[in-house]
Amino acid sequence: MGIENLNEQIQKNKEKLQELEREKKKYSFNENKEKRRKRARNLILLGALFEIENLDKENSSALLGFLHENKAIFFENKEKYFEIGEDILEQRKNLKARKMNMVGKDEIKELLGLVNIFKSKKEDLGAFIQNRFKKKLFQDLSMKEFEIIKNYIKNL
Figure 1 (cartoon, rainbow, N blue to C red):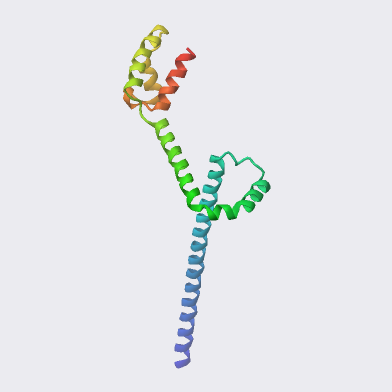
Figure 2 (cartoon, rainbow, N blue to C red; figure 1 turned 45 degrees about the vertical axis):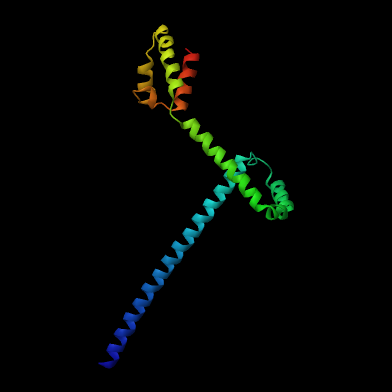
């Protein structure tokens, strides 16, 4: 009876050990997956920085050589470059926000003037906006949509 109990305990412990090993592999896989995800995100961000500066099409060997030769200068002036980079990113953010901003009073006045041009061409600006942008009010248009309307009128 004692040997059978010991064999049962050994079997249960083997099963627990196998379960723990599976959990360890699962945890390790998830940990590696997270590391790969962070690395991929970092590489994408670095690629975006090269794209911002129009260096993404340059020869990688030339870029590596440049970075290698100027690494010491970078580390000596890191705070200065940080501020420059922050300014560039802020300018890009503001520019993007302006492009996506909604139309203002001046653009609405211009749209009201465009209504007559549409009518002279036997078109309805309101219908065009509803069909194209699924919007009913001029003030709901973005600056990008406003530019699309102006370009559309030029081609009428």
